[in-house]
Amino acid sequence: MALNIQIKESKKDFFVGHSKICKPLGQQTPDELLSLAIIARESNDPSMIALFSVLPTLTELKAARTEQQLAAIAAEATAVPAPEVTPAPAPALVEEVAAPAPTKKLNIPVPSVPADGNKDKTGDTATNSSTTK
Image (cartoon, rainbow, N blue to C red; front, side):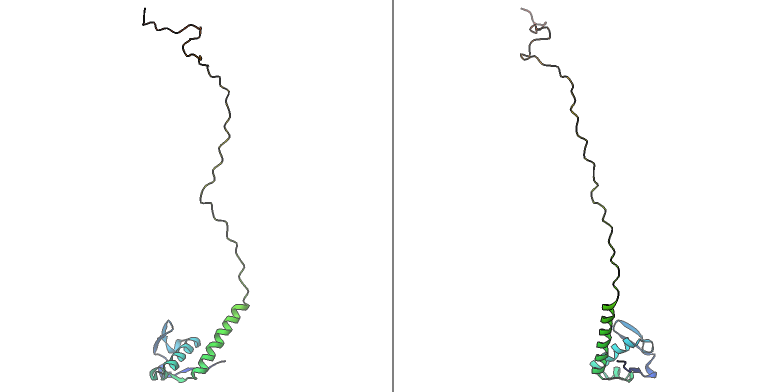
């Protein structure tokens, strides 16, 4: 449904801020003019209505907005989806450390200690040379 929304020639240089934009009326897109026309009809503000030389009814304006939104939804639904990108695996947060090598049992001879602890290698009882009887 194409609506005929027209701005008065004398008002095309007017700056009007609405819907996150602020530029001269003559430079606004048809969608921006539709938004402004809906605002003008809903507010019923005479100064806003005076900007337009042709201004459809609020019902016609909202029907046009609905058609635009439905067309956008249909276009989005039939759009080819972007290919899925498989993300690369995240780097490990902890470095992997190689397990330690198994320990090897060493066969080192250990000198034996006499069971009574007092005999030296000759089998004699140990004596202290500093003491005499």
